[in-house]
Image (cartoon, rainbow, N blue to C red; front, side, top):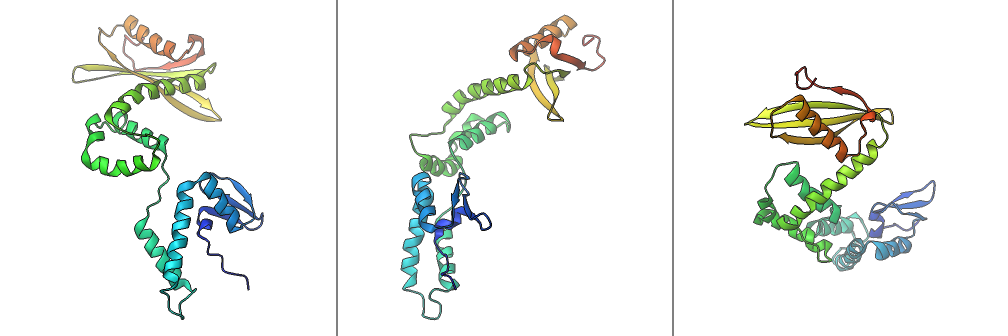
Length: 245
């Protein structure tokens, strides 16, 4: 009967017995075999936090081994004590700098929160341990998120422009009025990979009288922003307003 494989470095890998390969659950790196030393070496080189966790578990296991009774030594009882201790002390989440920044931007732009929320003490108690774990002078506050929002918008426009480049598209145009403000919404639809995809090109406030010429000019400005040529437009869907015609 083989020796029981209890090295905690295997917690971060998925072993495929038929292929004799271990796949890292963090970066999807494939490694031949299931040897604990090789797995641990990979964690040491590429995933320092997980490697520290493995080392801490080893120390804990050595400490509780002396406390185990002869009847339970080496049994699942020791492992249960180890797991209980470790789980009470450590919390593992899959987060990185990009995910944290995108989440903070989404709070402001999608969820409609104020920039003040990023400075709330309760939010800081959740965010600061994550920021400290990332390190490398990384910080999150209302000022740097304000600077990132325009940069993110430019990136999204660039991605949409690339997706629509030289493609035949259909436009959907509508105007919504609320609280004395009128917003012109423009969407583009096209088929990618056999499926209909919808892109919001703009939600533009209209400040002049809603004449057909004015709306036409506003639509052309939005299309120009995405480098969309008029000849790419297959159809335009609107309501029956005379100004839309």
